[in-house]
Image 1 (tube, rainbow, N blue to C red):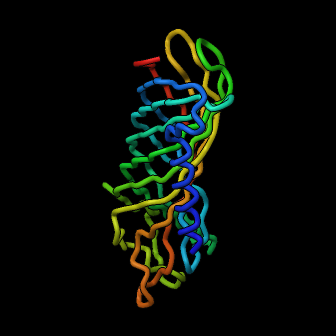
Image 2 (tube, rainbow, N blue to C red):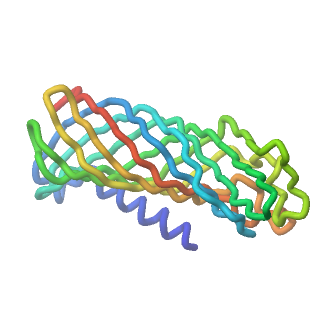
Length: 230
């Protein structure tokens, strides 16, 4: 039920970003395209739980943004991306063996975001931006990395070792905010984001070892956009 509520709220945000004639104050037609890059600090929500620390991985891709209206002092639009994203988890193993283990999982991600901005409207200046919406992803590769002396016997749970993902398709909610600096050579956006996965990459029936195996991460990114149409 909680997942359903999150999807409903996100849908309402996207509807609010579309042009609505009853609320239209000042129409815009600003189209921008560019690239983005940054890092993810990720973990996985397991049930039963696993002792974890954060795993750091890269993220980069392309961004396209369209701003269609200004409503009062708020610029409203929609933003789409296609990104390569590395996530996964790193385990805290404190049994005195010195063993280490982490799993990196690489995804192609496609977020579709409601975009809101406050601040400088036209010309050079600073804006504060908010982005929120659904995201889908597809697992393209995964890799286990462990110490040479690796011996998982006696650890609970240990079904994750050597077990690759059952499900490659991933979906969830992503949102964040930051600052956009508009200049003569393009627009630079520094942004922090949080992703919460609503899907599980392991099967989660009663006979399976994990009832929950969902991704989450905090991301920091820098985006460069060039205005194709102002």
